Length: 147
Image (cartoon, rainbow, N blue to C red; front, side, top):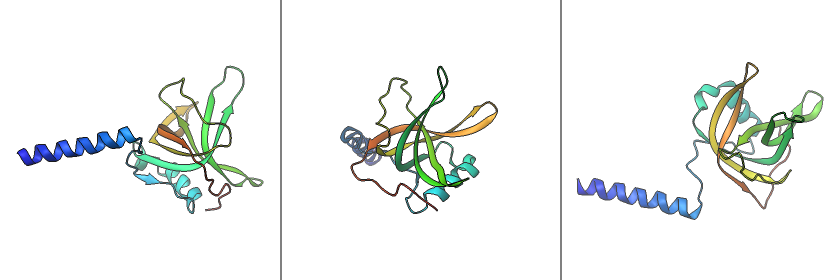
């Protein structure tokens, strides 16, 4: 019993130290650069399999304002093929629990880690990442992805 208590205490101390150092939480799905488009499509097609999981992705940050008094959306995305050539964007909406949270500047390259959620808007389901961390990175990855 003492050994179990010691192991539990060691695990708690390790988690506390990681939190104090600002390390990111354990990730269930890492959306990789090489398969970015494919993995985002997988999340959307099979959302029920991923809801509540911790997802991480890197990309550009963007805020979309829908007009005076309308909703504001924040995205981590990459450019991708679209309906008219290379005009698509692929990524996830991100949101902090705190409505007064500070977000990065437009077009900053970020790493987002959060829990995948689904919400309904006008009868349509949408995915969003409830952020655990959002970090501006000094080095950019591929801005345009095809797979």
